[in-house]
Amino acid sequence: MNFDGRDMHRLKLMVDRELPDGRVVVINDSRENAPVGVLFTSLFAEDVERHGDDFIQKTAGTSVSVALRLESVEWFRKSIDVVPSGHNAAVRLSGEGLAALKAHLTARKDGRLVFLGSE
Image 1 (cartoon, one colour):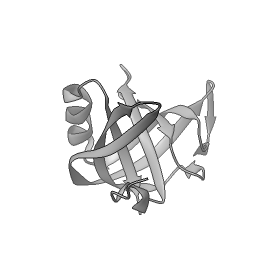
Image 2 (cartoon, helix red, strand yellow; image 1 turned 90 degrees about the vertical axis):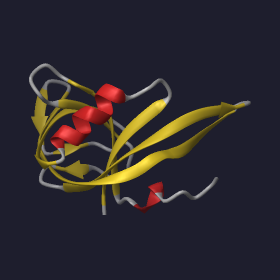
Image 3 (spheres, rainbow, N blue to C red; image 1 turned 120 degrees about the horizontal axis):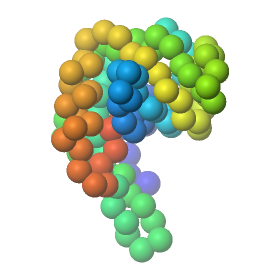
């Protein structure tokens, strides 16, 4: 496995899409739950390439500094206090960087994943 800096984040949410109400669907790609109130400080993308039976993720472009706070989590139609590790949820974010996040989602090409990371 090539170390490319992406594992430096304590919490890492993959952002899938924006919902009509402004929330985003995320997948918690961390080894721990992401609690309401956590501050995400970086926005970055990774390209996924297939090499035989292996999938390799490589950083795409540069990381953008953001200050996005996790305000609420809806998981299986319930409001809860965390995005459980390994699960997806609809979340509301607030703070600096929402426009950059939406721009990344809009411009995303096939095979590119968009992430939020906390330190």
